[in-house]
Amino acid sequence: MTSTVVMRTLSWLHRAGVKVSGGRFGGTLVGLPSLELVTVGRRSGRPRSSMLTAPLTFGETLVVVASAGGNDEHPAWFLNLRDHPQVTVSLTGRPPVPMVARVATPDERQELWPRIVEALPNYARYQERTSRVIPVVFLEPV
Image (tube, rainbow, N blue to C red; front, side, top):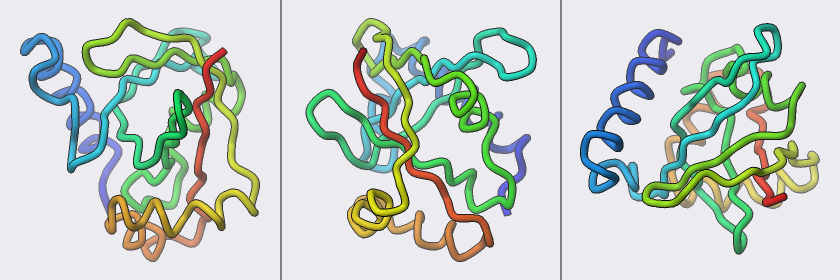
């Protein structure tokens, strides 16, 4: 299992690489578009930033996966957006965009999951590692 400390460190390094390179590094990760998701902390009320990949896009709507590397706990960013669905998303080289997060229904997830695994096979391994159903989230423009 991937530790939370490792996940946060990798996210920090990714964000730093994007900023230092002016977006020339980190615009994609493992062949997928990367994004910076800013949520509102569910307990602190403060902005919280996470670097993620979007295995699927539908026009301007992005799909992200709350896998946390197969950990048994949902990632903090998911818990935050579940409580406060108004988020901000920055794709590399683009200004931040306000979006609304929506957790996929079980039927939507079932339909999308094979396409998500095709985009990044690691997601299948992450799901095998945990007993929780890994949530799929739509990030939709306001």
